[in-house]
Image 1 (cartoon, rainbow, N blue to C red):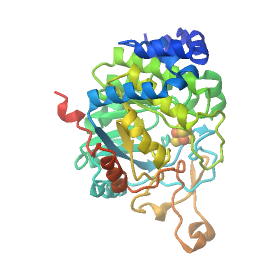
Image 2: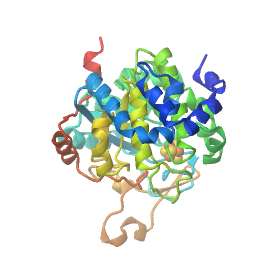
Image 3: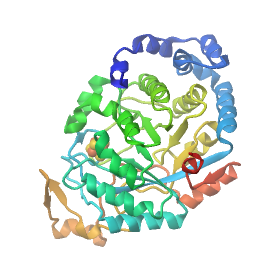
Image 4: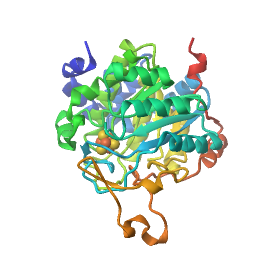
Length: 397
Ligand code: SF4
């Protein structure tokens, strides 16, 4: 049974009731259980559990150090293209946004990767919008093959594909596949995804399974917090993770916790999750999943990121750019708008506004602008070791 089928029979309303109403005493009992279950996780998300942040943090810290050591792995996103055929109301790359677009050539992607390698990164996440005309399957395979020569660990965050379409990417050297459901609330999902193939909720939900069948050995999932109730989203992410741990057990799993950031289109979050609630969620995930990697991006402020280092986060992006060419400026000579799939050239004023060359539009504004070496230094200062490489591949027989 796929997760999409299992998802429909989850007792979500019961779990959500626990997450909304559990008392501090009930949450304490869940925290004290040796092997917490999904119902305990629900209680650890409750407002009642907010009073237990200190003991929750202590358990999360202890588990993280036991399973992962005092180590934070670093990675960087490398955006290949900001072309997209979908309209997602919360995303700057949405098809109908009149933004500056570009798709890097394979050589340009290599230059971006070289810049990241020179900074020390060995773990790169290739990111792209979904557009068959500009971002073909063969183009993606060429990029992976070109970068695999120099980059020990490559993952992909791209439009969902069929299992057979993923196989050449795995053969070319991609190890990881990241796909966020964005929201697990079907109604909100339909409202947010107004056109394009991404409207198909179940197709996206089953993507990690297809990726696993194709041979990816690292899977990343998550929800985008700010679209629907955060406790409901977290419960669905946890149920999804439990399913993947049972059915895709040869893969290592990561969960990301992105909160919505400002972007082109000026979409405002529909729901709120406070910093304190994010801390509670990180700790609750760690307690339910002692061995699952937890990912934090530069969407969060330096202060919050630093504070979350000891509490359960194991993987962080650093020094990120969320536009193609962001690290070296490559691709600036090809900037354009895209209308109905056709490339439209820029006028002189758009090309060099304010006297400086234009650059491709970013997906969202980041909140932690520190260069990667500064983030690494801070991690060291906190008593943790920043690791630039994902060593899973070396440990996998
Ligand atoms: S979220 Fe992804 S699919 Fe949606 S518009 Fe942005 S890049 Fe395209």
